[in-house]
Image 1 (cartoon, rainbow, N blue to C red):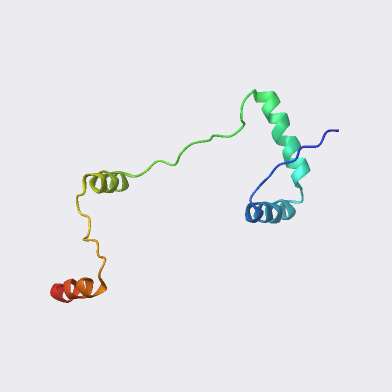
Image 2 (cartoon, one colour):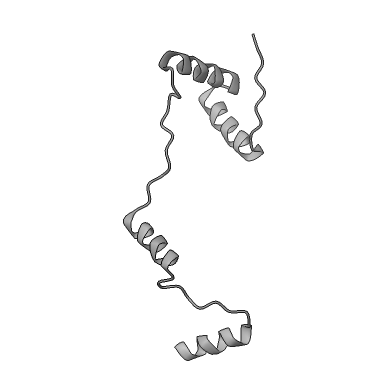
Length: 88
């Protein structure tokens, strides 16, 4: 047997351990399954992708990059309150 040391975020490790405990397994078993699947498939055995943004989010990002629909910025609290009172 060989040992693999991996650095992971503490919260992620704790959450994963809870799930693995519930499933009746442990990190060693899961890592061994993962490594065997890598060998069998000669790939990472799950899809890795960036979540797709919906059309509304894409438009909001594009508008923000163009400066469309942005609210006014403030460095003075009194000025901000005056503008807010005007809106009422």
